[in-house]
Length: 128
Image (cartoon, helix red, strand yellow):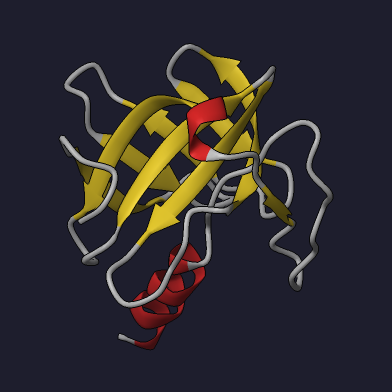
């Protein structure tokens, strides 16, 4: 249960960023400040089954970010930079986690060893 809580807290901090913004480092998360939402393109949005927050992959210029949005004060002005490995696979250089969009639209969050630790269902809105 502690591992799930730790993962939930960690993922609550994952937000999004843009190419011209200043980098903010929080621990080893590598959170970066993002440009305004109207400067970003949403690749996909998911609601994690294990949490009440949404996650979205967003493109800002030529960069991609994981953004978390939760009720109760989490904003969408910071994110974790992702490397786009293919049309459906992204990876964080900061934590080694990968984010794979399955053919069904489900988002699978994998840890460094490749184990699926969280699943997300496609969600129609950015906010929960």
